[in-house]
Length: 359
Image (cartoon, rainbow, N blue to C red; front, side):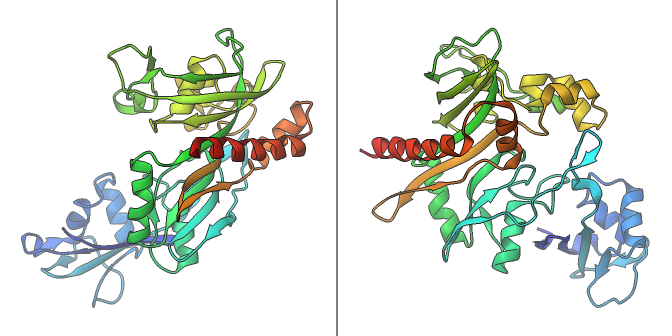
C-alpha cells in the first residue's frame, strides 16, 4: 500500500503517499496520476504548480517533471472551495457548521446531523462531513458507526475510537438497534388511507452508471430485489399532506423513501421519487426550473432520523432530536396544528413504543 495516512480537517484534506521501488525515478505527475485516477493529467499538473504537493525533505514548489525516489513521502493537499456549496432557487443555502452534540462520553458522539452534511468523506464531499466535524472536536480520528443519506437529518452515532466503533457497529449489524424517522409525505392516488401498516416491498439495486441512484420496488413475493421492511404510522393528515413516523426493520438504500412512494405518499422535496430522475438531474446540474422548485417546495427530501434506541449497559437508551428548521418551518407555515405540542406528543409516543418493544 502506498498510502501512509489521510487527514480530514474542516478546511482541507491531506493524504501522504510513500514511493515504492517500482516507482523509483518516476515523474511526480505520473506518480500522482496513479492515486488520483479521477483527475486528468492537466489537473494533476495544476495541483503541483499551485504548491499543493510536497515531498518530505524538499523545500519549495515541485514541478510536474520532478522525480520521485524509493521511500520518498509525497503529501497532497486539497483545500475547501465552493464545490460543497448548496443552492436553492438561485440562493446559496446557509449550512449549519456547528451542529449540536446530543450526547458525548469517552467513546461516542451522538450528533444531530444537519441536512446536506455527509456522514463521512466521499466523492467531492470531503469537508462538510460528520466524522470530519467530530474529529475537529475530538482532536483525533473518529469512525462512522452507521450512515444517514446526505439530505437526511437527525440522530447519528460517531465513535471516537476503534473499540467503540466495533461495539456500536455490531449492534447495527445484528439488528439490535431500533430507529425512527419523521417524514412529510405528499399523497397521490395510490394512497389507501391506512394510518398504520408495514411495507414489505422488495428493493432492487440501482441501475448502471448515473441510474444507480434510482431504486425500484417489487411485490413482497417477488424473486427480484432484496427483502425490506418498514413500519409506518401516519400521525396527521391535511389536504394532500401527511406527517408520520417510519420504523425501518432493515437498512436498504433509500428504503423509507421508496416504501413511502410504493404506498402513495412520496416524501416532500424528494427530487427522485416525488419528482423524477430527469428532475433529479436538473437539480444536480443546477438548471432546475422555477416550476421544479415550486413543485419540490423545500431544498431536500423531508426525512429526519428523529430517534434511535440502542442497548445501553444493562438496559436500553433512546436518543431523540426534533427536525431542523427547514422541516419545522414548512409545517408551521403550511399546516394547521400546534407544532410544539405535536412534537411533545411524538416524543412521548416514541418512548412508549420503544418500551413496548423491549418487553
